[in-house]
Image 1 (tube, rainbow, N blue to C red):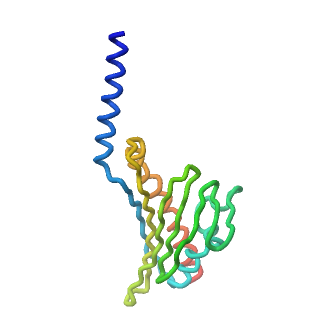
Image 2 (image 1 turned 180 degrees about the vertical axis):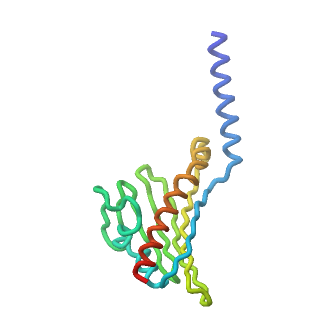
Amino acid sequence: MRFFKLAIISVIFLFIAVTAIGLLLPSSIVVSRAIDIAGNQDSAFNKMSNMYEWKKWIVGLDKEGINIESATEGNFLGTKVTITDTKNYTIHSTWVGKRGSEQQSIMRIIHNESSPQIVVQWQFTEKLKWYPWQRFGSMMNEAVTGAQLEKNLANLKHLVEQNH
């Protein structure tokens, strides 16, 4: 009985300690990547603002189970994606996962008139709850999501420069 009581108290204390440490971590994470493209900003914007064009440069959108319902809405294997705003060479979208977790995405084109290149920047922002496993798990999000963004932006670069 004494050992059981000690085990319960230890688990409770450990949970409180891990939760307290988790609360010191940020409550939202932003994963952002950018790439220089030698191409036309209108051409790049058209490929970025239309989900039907996404199949050409976003890895995995050619799989079975991907349902693009319109130029602004799609269901990617249970993740509901909606483009909410497109203006000034910026595309805002909301990605809602199977379990209801929501991420905000912003794709933007930055163009300096004195440069022949454009910069395409893509970022995801996720708000986290207080749960310690969410806070600690978010540290892996940078590596996984970042690599995916880099690969997709490289595909976009190739596609835009090929048509330039």
